[in-house]
Amino acid sequence: MKLTDREWKAFRIGDVFSSIKISKSADFGKLKNGDTAFIGRTGSNNGIQGFVDMDSVQDADCITVGMVGTLRAFWHGHSFATSQNICILRDEHLNEMTALFLCPMIDRALSKYTYNHPVKLGTFPNEIIMLPVTGSGAPDYNFMEHYIKDLMLQKYFQYLVM
Image (cartoon, rainbow, N blue to C red; front, side, top):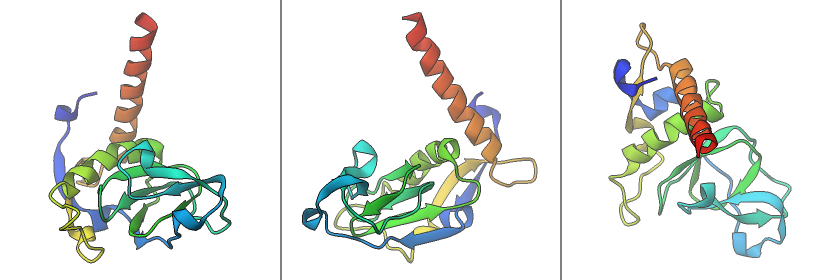
């Protein structure tokens, strides 16, 4: 599967995701160690700052974006807690594979922002990402999913040959 074999179109982030909200936040330093992933504004480890003991968590199967600092998008297939300024993106087409395709697109759209010039929740939905489209011009989620699966299989077989 090749990215160049597809037609691409510009989409507003707000048109790709049915829900874009700032999460309810907690102070990592005031929480006890536990089993719940704590998502912060870090650009590494899938945004996970550590693990905490917390009952109030966000539901799984979403993308988080740190709105200040690293401005990175990450998929979360598990429930989690968050620090401040974490945006949560949800949509019915979102699964691990489509999210792994979408996250770099979001990262690229946010690359113009800095810590001193952060993206704002009011303007974030208007940011543009490029996506492959179906014949009707809708985002081609089926292609996105299969493209990521194909990349994973290529990587897997590469290790088998070594």
